[in-house]
Length: 79
Image 1 (cartoon, helix red, strand yellow):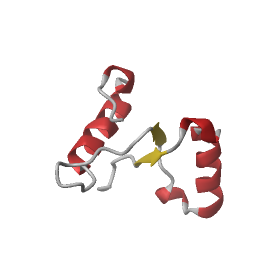
Image 2: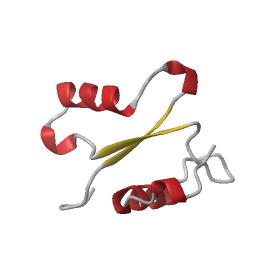
Image 3: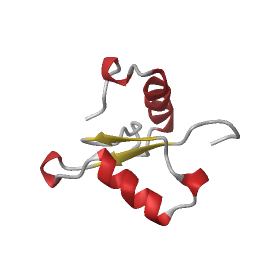
């Protein structure tokens, strides 16, 4: 992220795994420098991909913007 931008993490998890955002943030706080800890972690059923199978960075950036605005629940979610 550029200076002044918040970091957002997107993690693909199985809904039955029991993993939640708060436990992942706790792990980040234990192992990362403060400036590398994401502001939020979004759990997704699957990470968005382009038509050629690569991670869709544009879609993830849009999800991050929606998360920053507090409108993530109104945005289409991959999966």
